[in-house]
Structures are given as C-alpha cells and as structure tokens.
Image 1 (cartoon, rainbow, N blue to C red):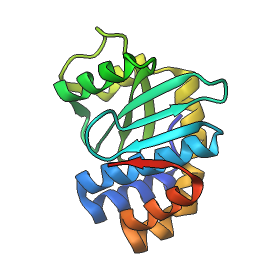
Image 2: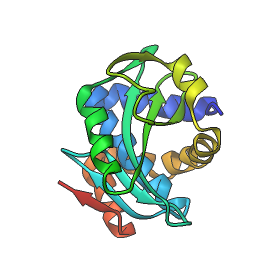
Image 3: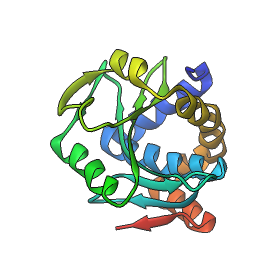
Image 4: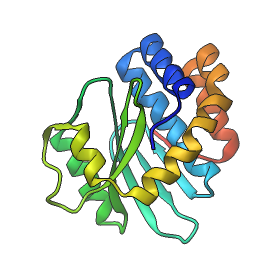
Length: 176
C-alpha cells in the first residue's frame, strides 16, 4: 500500500533536510509512535546497539525490528543488522526488517526474518515487496501517514529532540 503523494512529499522533504542518517532515526521514532498509535505496548526504541525497535502486539506477541530507509532501489543489510535480530530472537522476539522506500512510491515493507531468507548485502525493494508480511505492512502503512502529518511540524522545527519529547510523553522507552 503506497502512500499518497502528500505523504511521499513530506518523507522526501525530511530526508533532504536532515540527510539520510538522521532521517533514518526520524523514521524509526515515527515508527515507534505508529506502533503506539496501533495499540502496541512495551515499545523500546534503541538508539545505539541492539535491534532498532522492540514491541509487543495487542495480543502480547513480541516483535523486534531492524529498520532501513533508502532513496535508492535497494537497501544495504549489514551483518550487524542480522546479528541484532538473532540476539533478540533468543529472548523470544520475532524478528522483522522494516524497510522504507523514500520517494514518490514510498511505503513500508515488514519482512519477517527466518534465519535464512535475508543475507548481508544490497537487496532490492522488489524482493522486499514480494517477501513482506502483507497484514503487518498494511497495518503500519495505514497509520504511518497520519503519524507523520501529526508530528511533521514538530520534526521540521525541533528535529529529533522534539520527537523524543513526544515519545517520552507517550511512555515509549528510549534505550541509549
């Protein structure tokens, strides 16, 4: 489910303003808020080591997410990314890669990691589209545009610090 043009334009504007690395963190923070808005709980946003996000669904299933964004036709998956998911699986979390295509056809792809299906290297968005979990991807893609629009002004004016204050007020844990 691709985003409408106005959502795509906001994503592109933020990526241009903040650059790829900071925009990746912005997208991660926005996804944490998206999960919160969808009723997920025990959301932990990891800033450095470990997988990027951990959360529990409304039915108490434990998920961990490694997040990637790219304006290219592919994303780079590193050995560290796979290792982070594997480490969280030991604690009972189901591992996913969340991949955001940045551009006029923006959307999130939630791809379950099964230990063999994703190898380190450059992987094209076509593969992520085919391998994604359609129910989870659609759920995230249906809520994300509203979260982005609701918080765009804060991001535009205050960047990550403003978004972090918002997450703190929602009870989303930030792990340094």
